[in-house]
Image 1: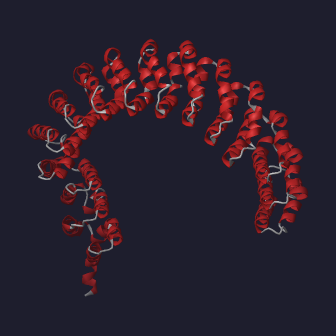
Image 2 (image 1 turned 90 degrees about the horizontal axis):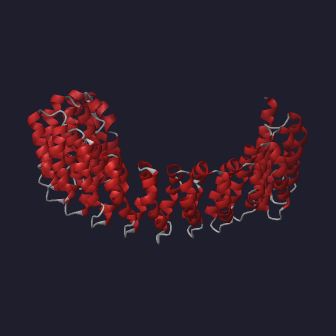
Image 3 (image 1 turned 90 degrees about the vertical axis):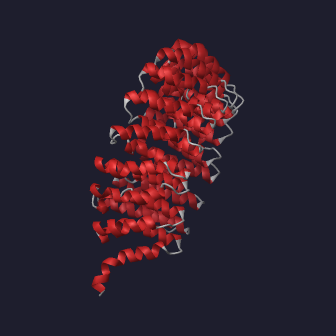
Length: 586
């Protein structure tokens, strides 16, 4: 009897768990569907499991979402692509539920299954499903149907293709804004599958309907479709159909629509070609840069370099630069920050002289901005300007501002400057660095904020790598070692950290003669934190120095630390001793 009942066991458990009040049990059961399907076999999965899932009317969105996801990868468990159609009914039901994320996942799974289905199955099962959803009484079904046309259309016979285009056109004029939004979102994907003659007539007609919609949420999604459609059309068609729409949208009464235009505009320039860009899109972009809504100006300012790359330098100087000057003193810090993050990229586009005359004053004003984010965005891109104007001019004009930022009251600003110093050092050269920035690097090792001290220690190491051990021995190591006598133990810990980073760069001789004695001396410190950090540093230098130094100097110090009253000091000293034993054995 047990033998007969056994194959029924998995589905019986599934049914029990799917009816359980505990949502976690129901979720676990859905996530194990593939295991259950393997246990049942392909035929019973098709005949029992899938119908059961289709009838499952769980009202919890999390369970339904998991089910929609699982069914998308279920083709192997139902017997391959020839039986893929059995998965469509439960997913069709999920396409009509109220929760958006469940519907989206069901559409995604249907697209995945449809992409693998045979052509005759698509015509027999998939296209009727799309038509049913598109004619659904409840708007959720119609919303879901819009995402499926791209899969259904390519395989359809000519008569059905005409019908599908007509259905999509109706969806673009649906009474419910949610349906029109979905139609606008998916129009680009659907258009990519439509033949060129129909693209110009039918798709552009749908596009026109959406661009004139009375809901701004529909119009702004239509803007997103502009770039996708622009790439599908010939340049002359793009100029005739897409360009007027974009120019109108750039003056739309809704700031959200103008925001979307500001984000998409540079992509359209590539689609329409240089002449229409010059005559129509540049004025539209200038309007957006001067928009009365800060959000629109932020989006437009963030694309200023990409837009300038498409134009020739004269046009950029004539039309865009005056707006950039205005934006650099904009009342919104977010606009200035967006501009600062991209403005440096304009230097290579404009060339040396315009950069010196026009952009440098803007850089300087942004470097002195009261908000740290604006200053940081400028600092992080300085190398782009250096390539254009050369280091002499850069250092004369921008270095005072950098030194000022190095002492900024916001620690994140100081941190950004530190991280930039090695790159700046390599660009400025040794002599200039010693003269202007060397003292700053030492000053940061005594900063009140730990993150700054930690970054300063890493900075010292990177400078030693950049300029070589001899330079470091002369300019860095003596000043670093002097700080080990600082009365505050946190600063002494920073120096120990700096020594552990410098040792591999400086090599065995300097480590043994200069760095190691300072570390050994610090093992007599009265603060336990210093002593266990000494143990860590000694452990890190063991592989660098000779075995004789380990035997005569490092091990005796560690043995002494293993007898320390503090438990942490003993722990790290023992760990370091074990490490030294392994090195000796090797």
